[in-house]
Length: 116
Length: 110
Image (tube, rainbow over the protein chains, first blue to last red):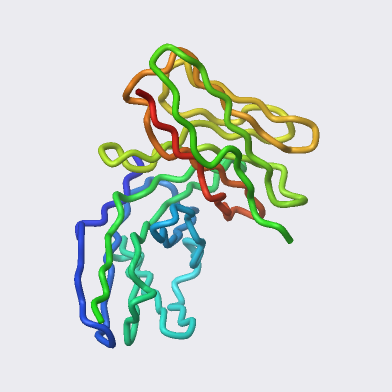
């Protein structure tokens, strides 16, 4: 069965600190996709990144970086030099790549509070 | 391109009523999915439509239904509302395996 675990319910950091959000997934598929979304207080889920199961390269985008490790079934997200605007709930999600359907399994989310 | 739009943004209903929510996908996207988000259950998949056909369905009772039109716009309907249906309902349109979400409809059932 598919499962996504975000063990950190809430994290508080002071502005400019680095913070890592953990994501561990379970799937029997060999081909799958992993995602990170940001949900600000407005409610809309904002797409951040997608990673395919066959691509284990780490990704960096500005202050954001992602570390995908198939050996530990983890897809962690690091924000460098955090800012108050980073405060939001962050979701990790898994999608299997069969039949071309789009059904995401989401983790429970990590609420990040960045204090000025 | 314009993003995913959802209407209405807020709704208040009473138990036993029914409600219809609307979603317009990003232009060119043919897949539309619906999710329910509650504090207790988190984000749960409701169903997905592609070219007017339901392609996948989550574990929700038959009171939850949906449809998709030829222009890819989608509606979801909840009949005989219960207090537990109070939630944020999110719609997503998909392209190439990635879902892009709308702002959601906040439904409060009294």
